[in-house]
Amino acid sequence: MTGGYQVYRAALPEVCAADPARMVFTADADGRCEVFTWDATVRRARQVTRRPRGTLHGAIDRDAHVWWFDEDEHGRGRWWFQPFTGGADRPGLTGVPPGLPRGLAVSDHGTVALALGDGRATTVHLGPRGGAARTVARIPGHATLTGITPGGGLLALSGAGGVTVLTPAGTVRAVPPGGGDTGRLWSLGFAPTGTGDPTGAGDPTELLLVRERDDHYVLSSWRPATGTVTHDWCAFDTEITARWEDGGRTVLVRQDRHGRSALHRADLTARTLTAVPTPAGTLLDAATRRRGDLHYLWTATGHPPRLCSTHGTPLPPLPTVAGRVPGTQRDVWTPGPDGPVHTLLSLPDDTGDTGAPERATHAPAPAVFLVHGGPADHDRDAYDGVVHSLVASGFAVARVNYRGSTGYGPRWRRAHGRGVGLTQVDDLVSVRADLVARRLIRPDAVGLWGTSWGGYLVLLALGTRPGLWRAGVAVKPVADCAAAHRTTTPALRALDERLFGGTPDEVPERYARSSPIHYASEVRAPLLVAAATHDAKCPPGQVRGYLAALRAAGVRHEAMWLDSGHDGYDGGDHVAVLRRAVVFLDHELRGPAPGTAPGPARRPRTPRSARSGEQRTAERTTERRTTHAEGHHPQRPARG
Image (cartoon, rainbow, N blue to C red; front, side, top):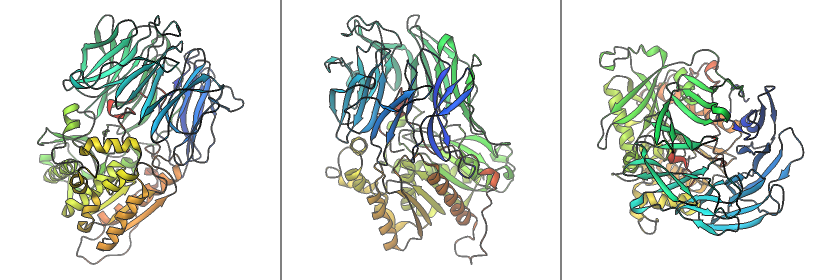
């Protein structure tokens, strides 16, 4: 705990395949995200890791060994493990240099596969748990290890070039067709059955795949004997992820659609798709455990996350918020050139909202557009401590799923008609005008707040549409697209080149047109910029260049520097940014209107009890069994 805040993002516990009462999860520990064990039989937790900067990546194998990734401020490190009940820390494999985590997989017999990146390539290492490693493969660029067969006979990797199946000797066993007419393809892991044939020839294990085709996402699978099969009867119009269920050829499919979630069960033998009942809102994760016990992590805007088991299995307790979460929630759809833009709007309790905006008579509220990152991400009907704090302070909060967001299908993802960033700013502007016309927000008191790619859009909106915004908060942003491309990670350079259609040398005008630094002199609203000195995704140098441009133009701004990377796990930084940003916005959006004399200093309205919900802070991106929505797959890198 740090000042009443919870500094981690709740996640579904990983469960030991041989003993489902033994689990591993991440939780807050004195202001840091750390790895814990959970014994459901005795309902007892044990803290495993204690690192100064926190620990995010954790897993458990079939023999109940607990795994975690020990990384430095640059994200490089090594995998370690210890027995479930405690004991000495041991390296996952010996002789492995530190690197960026690109996946962990452990077979039923203790064969360990590790993938690590070095900024130029991804190297896969293999060996017995705790033993000497040997290098299996080295793949140029960013790739992710997505699984190993239970017998250790095959490995699967996903990358920009598609999916590759390898033998333990590093021989390519198969490359399921992807791209072109067949559609993009990515891997979600092997089924939890198999013979352990070291050649993979007799292993009946299937590799689960998802294919994007004809503006849908379709389940596929690959088997050594039969190759790739696309299950056309199991297609979805928006992004999905999936997990094998234990003991058969059934798959649990989680769909993100229009800011909410749905679960389906696909039987690959019977070719049937059945809806799985869950509460309305968002499922942050879901998995079927032994004997059909469904575990899921559910939340909604007014409800902090809670872990559920359909069989009543005791799961680790999650911290909650005392009393009712303030505000009322509604969906707003704004017409747009590529279809309606969806906004999740939270209104403070004192607005008197009647639920019918055309008949509303209350005074509109000052508003903050909380702009999501990514760009391959979306805002959900899910609890957010930042929303909680802002609404409790009397602000309306608009979370806009602009074009390019996930959860609205492939066409929406590809809709960048006006150019990178500029299309998204157009959507923010359209939604602003719509909410003003409905008299839900004050036109003279609208601010912006975003992190990472969201921070980039904040800076771009302030510069390209300066008359619309009263204040802005940009946390760890992209401020100069060309400079960021030169100094960011190789995966993000590749992402930039896909978005812009080339490098800054090849299409300099596109990078300049979409770069906030190009419009720095046009910014009129006061701005708070928080950046990190060790940020590899949104490097500090390009932020410093932007701040220098603001100074040269005489733009009123504040800078806040964090001694962390892009994805820090220490809550102190997050708490400091949250507090400073809320105070900043409170002063700027509820202070005197431009052109009037300033009044006496005011204390922010944020009540102390409302500052107890910060759970957005250290996003869990564990590479082990990464089964997020399509836009979050590691081979589709996002800045955050």
